[in-house]
Structures are given as C-alpha cells and as structure tokens.
Image 1 (cartoon, helix red, strand yellow):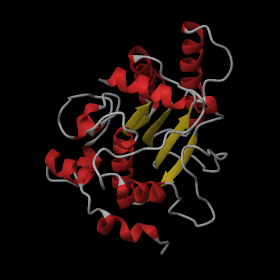
Image 2 (cartoon, rainbow, N blue to C red; image 1 turned 30 degrees about the horizontal axis):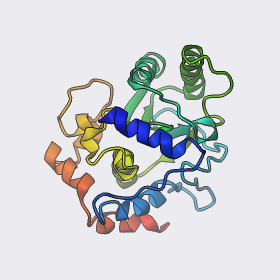
Image 3 (cartoon, rainbow, N blue to C red; image 1 turned 30 degrees about the vertical axis):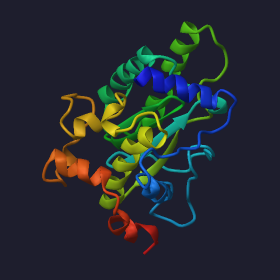
Image 4 (cartoon, rainbow, N blue to C red; image 1 turned 90 degrees about the vertical axis):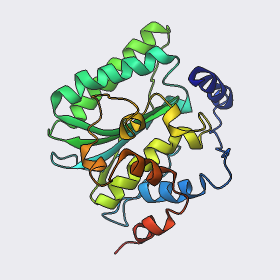
Length: 243
C-alpha cells in the first residue's frame, strides 16, 4: 500500500506541480491548515516566519545545544528524494550514524516522498556540520545508485526554534499528519516512515525519543486522540497570536 501511494505521489509531482491535499474524511484536515500556519511561524518573534515547505527561505536561526528545532528540507525542484523503500531505510540508518550517535535526539520525524521533517533536541553545538555530512552521504548514495547527477536537496536544510511546550506538542501532531493530508495513507499509523507508530505503541523502535512528549499524555490512546481530534482549535487558539 505504501509503494502504491508513493507511485501515485510521483505521478502527481512529476511535472513539478505541488500536490493539493484533499482529505478523504471531510473535515479531518481542516485544522491541519491552522496547525501548519502555527508551526510555520517562529513563536519567538513576529519578524521571523517561515512559509510552507514549497517556499524554503534561507535559514536565520542560531542552532544551540539544549534547544528543540523543527528541521526540514525537500527535493530539488520539488522532486523525489526517496524512490523506493530501501531509500527510506537507508536515510534512517544514516540518521542514526551521523546525528543520533553524535548528540542529536530525534523527538519525532516523518519522511515524505519529496521532503522530510525532523523534530530534534540538540546536545551538541555542531549540528550544522553533522547535518551537512548526513545529507551529503545520503545524496551521494542516491546519485550513485540511480546514476543521477546534480543536487538532490533544494538548498540547505531549514530549522525553526521550538521554545514552547504547546508548540512542541502540536508540532508532533503536524509532522505525524503529513502523510494523511497528502493522501498517501488514510490513517497516520499506516505510514511506515514516521515516528507515529512508536507514539501509539504499535512499534518498539529505538530511534525516536518519545518520552518527553508522551509524558504529557496519560496513554498511547490519549496521544492518538490528540492527533485525531477535530476540535483542536480550542487547544491551539492561544498559539495563533503573539503575546
């Protein structure tokens, strides 16, 4: 089912047109746009915002240990960065080798056919160099395997500082809902290449550090309800305005 969804995604994006999500469940993704608007703005300052994945400004955030960041990037010209299942697996393996092994905690993640989202907690001051080595190793492997040339990713990665607990929680929701609102799967747990299965105890993976976020919920079912809640406007209303 994942491969079929991947093929459909490729057909929709092969002519460089960004996909236009249409929810299979009326109303399910209505709040997704609201959440996306929230997580696509820096809660620290009105003067610094970042647009959706299709615009990608230059990064202006100082990356410091002891902080959370939303890290993301997409394929050059909106093209695929994952062509088959082995690519996703290799990306996650390199993520362990380059980031997790060197002082970066992955709190949540989602790998999409032409972009990725990482929610990270830094225990190192060298994150930019680690990311450069990580993405370069992945791009070189993909270029070699598929006999392609040129940049795989569009510019360097983007990062947004996460400085509020509420923002952190809703950012995990936004990340985990990506495949649903792109119509790749009907349920978030059906997408293999995200940390959502760990969050709801469907998979005992060791890659994401879920304890901090999960401690805010009584159970895995409580987090599932949080993700699927159609009335989340009340929960995120205070994040729509700067204090």
